[in-house]
Amino acid sequence: MSNYHIKHLEEYYQVYRKSIREPENFWEEVAEEHFMWRKKWDKVLSWDFSKPEVKWFEGAQLNITENCIDRHLTTRGDKTAILFEPNSPDEPAEHITYNQLYKRVNKFANVLKAQGIKKGDRVCIYLPMIPELAVSVLACARIGAIHSVVFAGFSSTALATRINDSDCKMVITSDGSYRGAKSIDLKGIVDDALEDCPGVKSVLVAKRIHSEISMTEGRDFWLQPLLDEASDECQAEIMDAEDPLFILYTSGSTGKPKGMVHTTAGYMVYTAYTFKNVFQYREEDIYWCTADVGWITGHSYIVYGPLANGATSVMFEGVPSYPDFGRFWEIVEKHKVTQFYTAPTAIRALAKEGVGHLEKFDLSSVKVLGTVGEPINEEAWHWYDDNVGKKKAPIVDTWWQTETGGIMITPIPFVTPTKPTYATLPFIGIQPALMDENGQEIKGNQVDGRLCIKFPWPSMARTIWGNHQRYKETYFSAYDNKYFTGDGALRDEVGYYRITGRVDDVIIVSGHNLGTAPIEDAINEHPAVSESAIVGFPHDIKGNALYGYVTLKEFGETRDHTNLRNEINQLITEQIGPIAKLDKIQFTAGLPKTRSGKIMRRILRKIASKDTSNLGDTSTLLNPEVVQDIIDNAL
Ligand code: 6R9
Image (cartoon, rainbow, N blue to C red):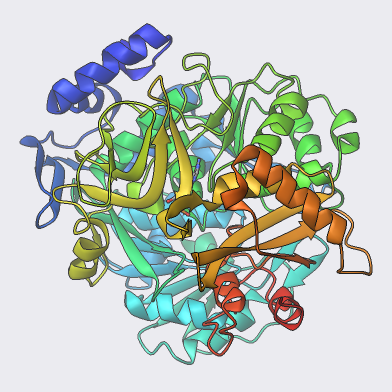
């Protein structure tokens, strides 16, 4: 059916217009033709953003695992569903076929049931990127338990907060995990967390690193013996369209983390439909998203979206730098990856290492490149385009959020002409709006404002677990009758969107609105610069002035680089104007980052404002050690 796979720009506009004019008919057609329903819906959509309440496919019944697994068995039973690439290149890859995935998920689901887990119970999954992670997610979905995956790099405090917030009854973990040359004692972290989690009744432990761990009698169980005993048939729980499928916590850059709740039918329809189109997916493709399943990108575009399309999805346990910076490219060559989806922070890290690592490998299988997670700077975009895609593989710069469930603004490869740093056009069914400070929509092109969405889409989060009021305040109160994304964006002369970054990263200097991303782009073009982050700090005359934290490709001994400071300001002056010049530039060995690679500007802002008394919880940072160094050398 043509609506399901868009092949040229004309068709995009045609289908887009239809999806806006008749959203219910449009999504009904997609849902009718491509999924397995136990019962069809009574009503496609009902919504009210003032409550807010959104329901898609109300009255329908289904199980998402029947759509992701069962229905493929007759046609693709022996096709690889999950292609597991271990941390060490010396360990063989594992090809898990749809038939095998069916059995593993059903066995796991039976283990959950035997442990007393029922529909609606919350199960916390704290696992490394091993097949059990995908299998346990699907096993929860099979029996209607609500999974809450917590990225296995979070500290025990962060884990305990998340377990308690949603009253998880069970934790699924492993003895430990591999990360490059290191191994991490995951079970120890879980044990620490559980001291503060009285609601957890049982812990299932997968064996990965074969380390000595302690098992608490009556609470902790090795997974494998239970799986060995379990039947490989487990009837799928029939779920209502709006039953919760999972909770996923968003990185709490402010306040306590928000448990975003996603429901079943709409999420399935939208992630499957976007996957197919945004990656121009074909049956024979080998698709690889380098994200962790602990993030929304992994949920939607490693597990659910690809499997709903019967795809082969690569799951990589390791890191891009182990055993060296050629690892990604080695994997691309080895498995003949056709779609490669990663984050700008990874691209920049790889670019820093030069092209030597890339040149050793044959990347000719790659048809489509993707990026997600933060605005991609121009230099990184070109590096990716030139060296990985060899200018032949279009880059899909996909803008979306944990809250949106699926990709919202993106090029469609071979359909939408790309433009560096632009996420380009709204996806089918998505109605963006740019708003001004007075709450008015800014119409027309060549404008910028705050990015909102005017109409519901099937995979939007329905609430924050246990706090609907916060959901309403955070997303539906800034602008009347609109979902507010928290991001700023501009729309160019042809209607392409460029995400300029979080609105809270906009700094007003002498009355001028300055986005941090374009300034950072300018700085990053300096050949000596590796990465940078700009924050505002209070200034008597200008209101705010700009403070730049800059990491250099070669850090060296001295932190006094007067010439370099002048050159950086010269670049900014040239590209943006003297107004954007930095008052202070601190050279640092690294920038504090969240585990998903986002720079923690909150911390940098505080340091720039000389307010280091309360930096908040830095334990979830990827590199907490850089914080003290930045404080010690602050200007
Ligand atoms: C999927 C994901 C969401 C925030 C979002 C925005 C930033 C994501 C982006 C992007 C520019 C892109 N973001 N993709 N900014 N261009 N292609 O990352 O979800 O972790 O919830 O982050 O990430 O600021 O609001 P999440």
